[in-house]
Image (cartoon, rainbow, N blue to C red; front, side):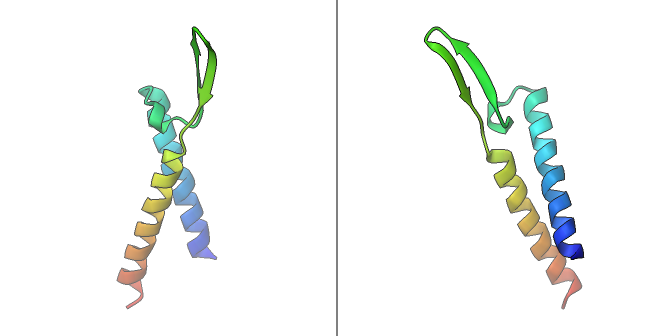
Length: 71
C-alpha cells in the first residue's frame, strides 16, 4: 500500500513539475493543452509527454528502491 501511494505521489509531483516548467517557459511539448489562433481558425492540441516521462521515472525509481532495500 505504501509503495502504491509513493508511486502515485511521485507521478503527480514529477508530471506537475514538468507541466509547470512547460507553462513557465512556453514549451508546447510539456503543456497538457494549448490553443492557437491561426488564419484558418483555432487549433487545440496537447502533449502527454509529461505524463509519460513521469511514468518512466516512477518505474525506474521503484526498481532502484526495490533493488537497494530488498536484497
